[in-house]
Image (tube, each protein chain N blue to C red):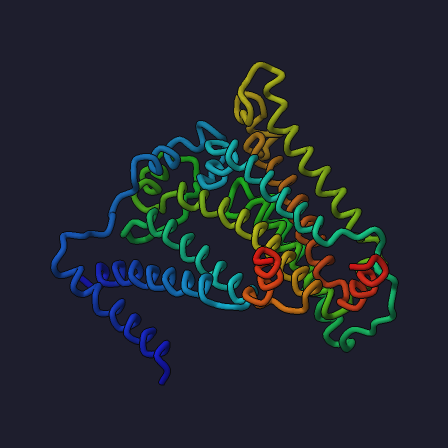
Length: 248
Length: 132
């Protein structure tokens, strides 16, 4: 047994035994009631934001400004990543066979399922747990499934290039910014929800701007992470050629 | 008693997890392993934030209204988990994922340019440059 394993084992044993000491000799207790701030959100979420889901209400209404800036961080981080991997043209097409017919057919069915589930996660984001980010990440998983089963070229051949994905992402983020900015022109605060956007359209509860934010965040996240997946799955050899062309 | 023990055990195990991941970030040579340790650390932090919103009730339900009647509000105040830590963690996960993607891009680029992900080998040319 190495020294490191011994230290790890000792730490593990200590962390299992020491709670016994803490529980027996300190007055520590588990919280049994929700804290005041959380209680406010749960009690007032429908009145303030028209959203029956308190987490979505906190994310896009009570703390809406935070989330808008967080989306900016997401945008800049992916821009940074793509700037490191900048491409002036798409990689040359190669004939790649991919996996067997069985796995291709199974993947097609799974992709259909994932797409419909991600749409449900987004469109119900203001009513049930879910929202733009979980839905978008779920959809971005499809590209990570397509790459090993069909090859990256099968995505690019169908016109889903990283340039177009970045364009979709830019448009979605512009729309998201506009949703946040529009109330300002009516003299309201930035990221206002209920005083500007309707709670219902016909008989459907849309919770004002929350469903709009979810939709645009979905497009931004899905296209951003699909672009990242595309960039990461471009073959190593292709980059080496490019480096040698430009002298590193 | 058992509930209290489990609760404190979770706190201790989270602390252990954080300790191991900080060790990984500081002492591992490979940048990929550093990134893996960083993701473990961020997940540990997210679980500790979720733990702040935990309340010991039964049943424990998500803070989501399933009907618009008054008893539903009372039921949720008693049995729902705190929505604020969940919302903060949701935000944190988004930022964490984006930053991890950025770091992964950087590591792959470093590997392509110098053929290694070993932090000590990567820094060697810089050290030599400074000493010259």
